[in-house]
Length: 86
Image 1 (tube, rainbow, N blue to C red):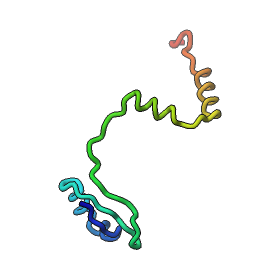
Image 2 (cartoon, helix red, strand yellow; image 1 turned 45 degrees about the vertical axis):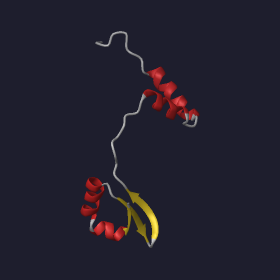
Image 3 (cartoon, rainbow, N blue to C red; image 1 turned 120 degrees about the vertical axis):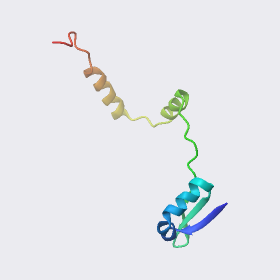
């Protein structure tokens, strides 16, 4: 069930609203000037990203030649000294 409340009302009763979301699982539609602004819902359990999920996200990133150049420069300069104790 979703309850519609104004952002002013939510601010006035924030502790109660958050408790209802957390403990009763209630959903709130926050409005400002009678226009929908945001939904407040329980966060739910957080999952872990798998390697495949991360690779999928990385593959969808736009190519940035300047970033690639920066990485190449860092890799070129990031060398282990022959004698790290010197």
